[in-house]
Image (cartoon, rainbow, N blue to C red; front, side, top):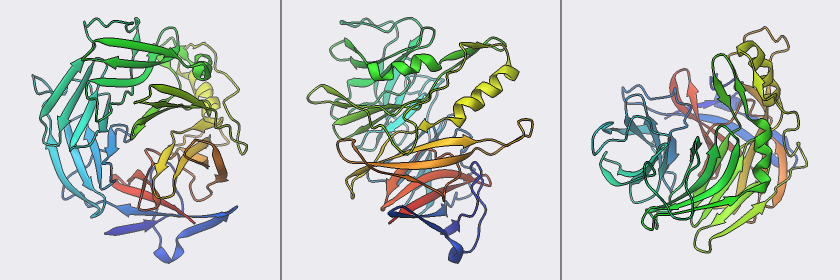
Length: 376
């Protein structure tokens, strides 16, 4: 097992030092420490180019699943042994295929993964076999339907109801976001408004040349019988309880940082030159990440951050540096405490809790590692 400790963390490139020099800083009532564990790739070149957006963990956090959409293979990492266990090939075309574009993967228990795309929602086992397939393409549902130019970018599927998905309906042209539930067995469609997410409408904009649409990030997760929804531009969190069909709003407004972005982008920029300062302005404001659950402590952790850019705007900066904060919330999503995290100066990606620490996959000189944040 290789272990690195952190002195400097620009973007995802780490520099090693002796373990005796592990960076530890006290902030308020918490002491943070950060180190990095390296994965043995077993002569494989692991997929790091996707920014870990096509990744998930097993329920017990023993395994990390990393989908290589370029080669259509699943890398299964044993996090206890810190080694690549195996690589599983998935067909792309045909009746057993994943299709040309996988939008997201979610581990759903019972050694199976939920693959979602623009139209298709399918369950595969960890050997590459398709177990179940649903689609919204050319299908009519009672109670409503997808609007034109609408997508369901990050839906989730409850393990007890493989015929049903819930997520955030997202319209691209006229920016609207709503709660969406689809039951494929009953052919029903339900939509509910999310007033606390109306702020999203102010942060969509387009570029003329080339034609590009920009918008804030959305996130969903499922924890037992509960689904959480969050957005990057403001602090509110919606919680949906599946058995009771109850949707609740939790504002979770911080006091250490702003509770939302306040400076809005123009509705349109002409080209990349006009885009760059707008993108920088948005990233320098507060950005909220999705809450993650610590079962042992009965707490949610939520990162937020403000990106830091070079003083000279013309200076190229390949590293996404950031000022990072951590909010602790109780089971009811009420804030318990808020902290700056001085040992992290990079944007956390796909954090999760394992063995009492927050783990984050990182690219360490083109090898896979996991930054591990501990607190006491």
